[in-house]
Structures are given as C-alpha cells and as structure tokens.
Image (cartoon, rainbow, N blue to C red):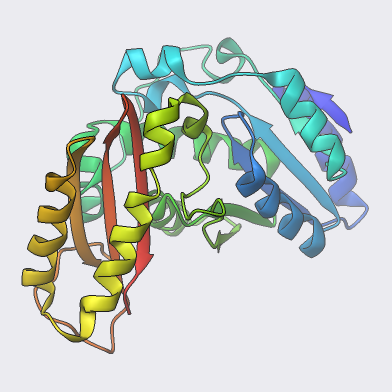
Length: 280
C-alpha cells in the first residue's frame, strides 16, 4: 500500500496510473475504520483496478467543536486494517494540506439540507460538500462509495455531483450492522457498557416502524415511534422522520410508487448516533 500525505504526490501517482487505463474506486473516510468501511472498500476493490482510501477528519463539517476533539483517531490501526484488504493507495493529509487558506465556499442544496441533520447541524453539509468536492478533484475517481447509514449525506453528495457536473459515479452501499442490529459507526467505540447494551433499541424501533407500515399512515406512525423513543429514558431523541428517498421531505401518506425511508438521530450515553430503515 502506498501512503501519500500531499495532494501533489497523490495526483501525480494517480494520473500516471490512469494513463495506463486503470479504473479508480474511492472510499473517503474520517478514519476510525470498522467493518462497515471495509465492506465499502471490498466492493470498490472488486469493481475497479485501484482502491484509493482517504483518511481525513474534516474540521469544517463539525458544528460542535467538542465532538471534533472527541472524534476517535488511530492512524496506525487504520493502516493495519487497510493492509488486510489490500488497499492500493492511502491519502492521509494534514488539515494545512487540505485547507491552506480559509474556506469561503458556500453551497446551496435547498430543501435537501434543511431537514433532519441539516436542521440540527448547521453548516455540516457545506463542510461535507467542500471536502468531498476537493477529494474528488484530487483523486478523480471513476466510482466513489458511501454507506447508506448516512442517508442524507449520500443524497447531498449525489446532488453535489449533479450540480458541479463531476465525472464520478456515486455508489450507495447497504448499512453494515453488528449482530444485535446496531449500525456500525466510528462513534460506537465511545459508548460505555450500559449505553452499548441499550443501543440495539434504535434498530429494533426502526424495525417496528417498518412492521407497522401496513396498519398506520405515515403521520400517526411517525408520532408512535417518537413516543417510543421518548419513553426510553436513556435515549435523547433529536429527530425521527419518515421521508421520501429523493428530496428527503417528510410525508404524511404512503405512496407505493415512491421510495420512503425512516431516519432517526439522538444521543445515547453522550454519543450521537444516527440510523435509518427503508419502509418502501
């Protein structure tokens, strides 16, 4: 595995490989790698000639500076995991390399960024868009792979590619879960023992929402699930919503011709967790 820390070295190496006709699959991450990340990478490895992974904890997508400080970092462990799947290139830049000047770029994603994560994390998706656009310009991948756990982020990135007319195919990959249903996340390592035992409640409640879909309209079902979360004293709900899977706008009635996803975010043991499940 080749490891690059500078944009110029990364671009030079990849441009030479592309001249040889090699296709590039790209998985951007913030490190603290887990099995969910590795599944993305395996798919990228299978579908392309080269697997490029970036590890960069992007400061401008954190609206909570305490959350940024606590974000887990272990580059050496991450490198070891990347070796196990035969990653070809790791791009691991410093903040100064990515942002030598203050960032002033502002994107407008309209209703997509005004709900759910966008409502509770102002500026978050602008920070995501800035770094993803920059990484795409550096790596110039043929395909880029993102997990569906961050469903709204995936929609934003697809919109970014459309708006900027970027020559990359964005591939959404299924959520990878622990044996008890908890969606894999780098933040899970911060859960204490009690919170970790309680964490599967999130997915169980989402499954209940899916089961009830044939018996309740979206509006009453939304309220029922909110009540279940709020009745759990260990869980502090930020939002639960049932939205269409394109514009992510809340729905009140089912339409079998449109995809529908139930999304949730909240705090458990001082750790913010998100998850979702497809209803239709």
